[in-house]
Length: 191
Image (cartoon, rainbow, N blue to C red; front, side):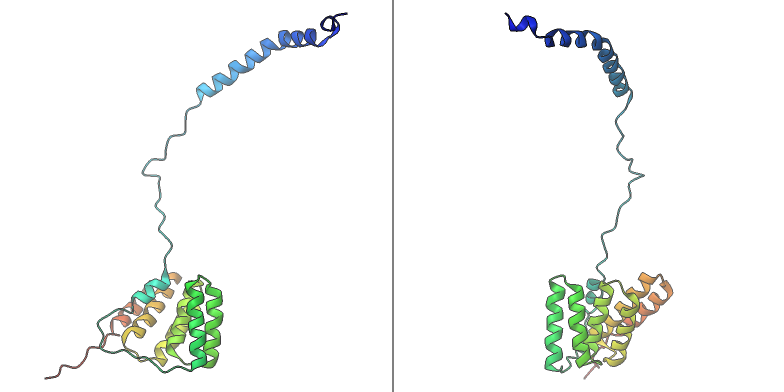
């Protein structure tokens, strides 16, 4: 007996091919027609493209404001324990751990709550964390406790200006910009 003659599968397969062939061909024709009718999506026109500004590095802006041609530099004496916490905060900030830096700085401020440099550093970290209100308050306290001139003064007013800009207070930001211009201290002319 031949195995091929008794196996019903080849006959069934031939019948399926014969019955489905017209439907498969019709389906393929419809799909090709749909693909042919579609057009590729055109690239966006230059008018519809929007440029996204890079994120603003507010801390770098504040620290850049410290540069200037001042004759006055004030380096306060710090409590050694507070200085250790300040340095830890700097390390955390450099590692991108802003929350840990803020925590370390709070410990330094617990030891030296009126230190203008610590207060300003705290204001900068508050800006980095998106807390403009705390940044402005700390920068203002730093200004009141600090020398009122020189690089620290400019950083104070830059932090206040940026906090106000972020809040949408353009008039207040303008006042802060003017105040920053008054921070320069030129030495007296000596003859």
